[in-house]
Length: 120
Image (cartoon, rainbow, N blue to C red; front, side, top):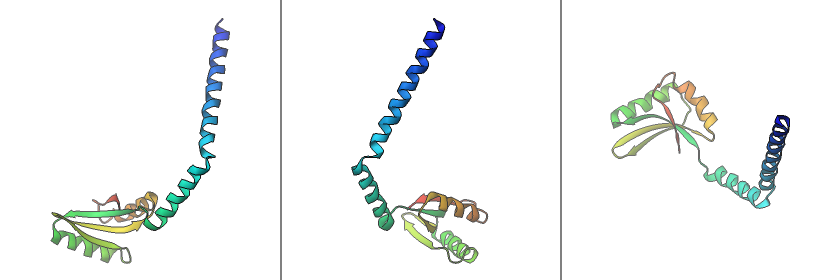
């Protein structure tokens, strides 16, 4: 009796697993979803979202000082000084993926410990 219940349990789990896998394959083969994904990738290529690293958020004098220090330490990296009332923000870089931003953040945090990644 115990063997039959164990066998039926495993058989049931096997059937449920197969149904779940076949349900997922129906959606990945749908042409409208693939078309939508392609359009989204094209949109992101030109208008896409990305990431920046924010070094500071606060007073104007300190923000300008941090921006100048960053430019001397990391020449060639895009820097942006932005005013969002009442604070000034120092943002650097322009990264397409979070992974690229994380790699840059590791280097930047050696000099600027308060740096964070933000979506642009």
